[in-house]
Length: 205
Image (tube, rainbow, N blue to C red; front, side, top):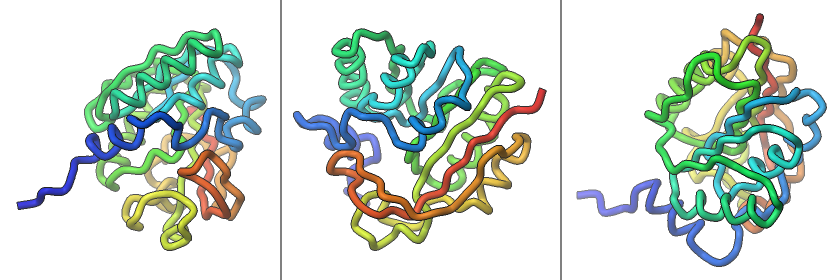
């Protein structure tokens, strides 16, 4: 019988300590892309400890954040209070979290790694959840990240490739789509040269 902890238990433990695994500053790709992201309602997927959600709230978005771990949600709310902004944060499993239809101007997925079948279904629902003209921004590790020791999931099946994302996000118009290496410095959890895939996609209309 498998006695290994569940993903929820693993993330509860990682976020439950005093420090912040991925720091308090936003993801560089998200920050650099802000001029392209418009305004309005934003949804942050697998938001962790709140750094990206709080950045978007500081930038004028009305932000909802979802993470599997209650401890991550607690830290998101703490950081939002420290920065003087509001984030509507929820603990939920993205496998069955209701995203809504035509609900968001922006959906953000930063290093939101999950099993391929769950991810493909989530991305299908993300496309439906965007308002016409809405933007989906994603950054994730690729299989080339495995073994680098600079962050990311331990197995390649949890990473993403540009080819897979083109299929999963087919209803959306890709404005930026690239696999590249870049320095990812985000707290102790991500520190060093990383192999990543980046997407900025728009729902037509």
